[in-house]
Length: 178
Length: 117
Ligand SMILES: [Fe+2]
Ligand SMILES: [Fe+2]
Figure 1 (cartoon, rainbow over the protein chains, first blue to last red):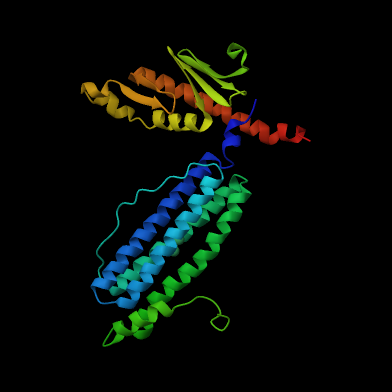
Figure 2 (cartoon, each protein chain N blue to C red):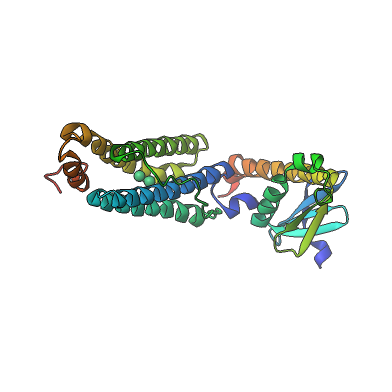
């Protein structure tokens, strides 16, 4: 008897399900960053707004990368419904703390997928997800550094203005080599 | 010729049976009077639809609208009109079928693959 399930896709149902969940999570991240960008714009943090617009685009690209993978493997990629997007934040610093928490949640989720892929002997998905593992190192670094700036520069006086200006300049890795 | 298609029975219950046709790569569901043939992806979608019905609401809501559930089998033009009992029986049948399909995958992975030179 032919193995029709396997002929359709190389993805196990459970893997397909968690990849679709990740697609949704990336879409949600993209939407959150967009509302953070708008908040920064409204409150005069122009540089940070630009930073969040860029982040929002990156998250959408992450979503597409996963989406294409599921689809290419013969799976059913589900265009995600995005709900519960916060539109208001308590303050400048809170925005960045929330961004860091969001990135940590994503890293945890990526790790779970890799764990599952290995459990199912799905080495293709394991390998595919390694790009995201690496990406999260950078994403977390940048988000953490942004929060640190609040302590390093301080919010008093022209502090917030200075922080805002410093945000887009954060880079990960060897600055000399770039 | 159509009655000579090689059908393999996947699962059978008192209410119906399912078969796999290796010529057309389709799953055939025989349930009560209904007989539909589905591509594997449509079979999985259909199973999800059947599994996602909220049985609890069906039982406890007295409104007539909750007495039956109407589920369409993708790209067959067939609508299943299901009472609560039908729904549970169909779920059983599809779950049993899915189990056999997974078992077949496992056998292909572990045993048959080594026979392909
Ligand atoms: Fe991401
Ligand atoms: Fe991110």
